[in-house]
Length: 334
Image 1 (cartoon, rainbow, N blue to C red):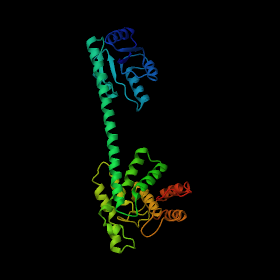
Image 2 (image 1 turned 45 degrees about the vertical axis):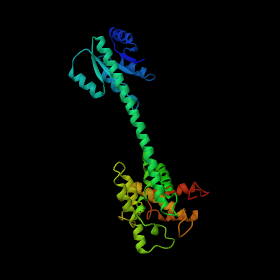
Image 3 (image 1 turned 30 degrees about the horizontal axis):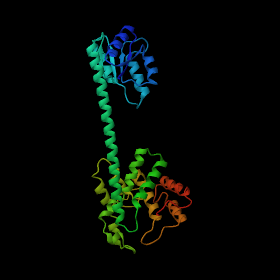
Image 4 (image 1 turned 120 degrees about the vertical axis):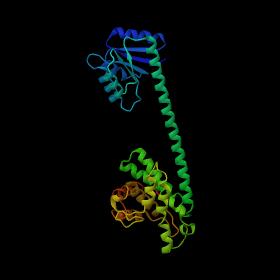
């Protein structure tokens, strides 16, 4: 049963609206002031509000403004203004405030019922559509994450010695971001950036990536191409431009001696500065072709010594804090 709140200081109008709407199977709550409506909405949510404009004390415009301000992000209840005149200024003001429609008094029964039903049906359709869009968006986000995770695993599979590297970097980066104060959405964004930061390694020969000994200058130059390659791949995803930023600049150094662009300090985007710390930490705490996992104390010392040179000191300090909360050294490659 549709539930209508009718607000009017005139008892005759309240009775007329109540009689018409009740006759057509609707539940009606009659209220005689804007303040009474605000109090009523504290614990109730009707399907629609019929709100008189001219009332003593708080008029219809002031009432609607107060409702919208108080309810904030809650679903908006549609409001139809009741008016006894043909003022264009009143209609314009009402529509600007978010009123759905205007109904003239005295009521024409058939018109009142049709407009009320039409407004409620339209509101429900819009809410159902919004919910469906949200559901589909969530499904697409989940699908996108699965695709990205699969791609990250494919990247890591190229390197015999970095199994799970991208996933760990993503987790560490997200935790740094959380502790730094990122919103949930930005935390999830940097997680995706972390998963794809090494995507450019797709273009590096396996013989170079998996070489067990020291790389030649030419081979190291090939390795150093992967940030630019990764950025070229990811910059095509225009909906998430920071994916490309993370790929391109995660090997920049805070003192400006990194690559590929030699950026320094805050010239390096914040997300890339976070990824740089997470990436270096995982590199030190994972097995490599040329060494085993570094001892915990050595990793902590490298982070401390790299503050302000290799790493943004703020994010290095957060990573050190995370290490200090992990005395058993579990935060590393298994």
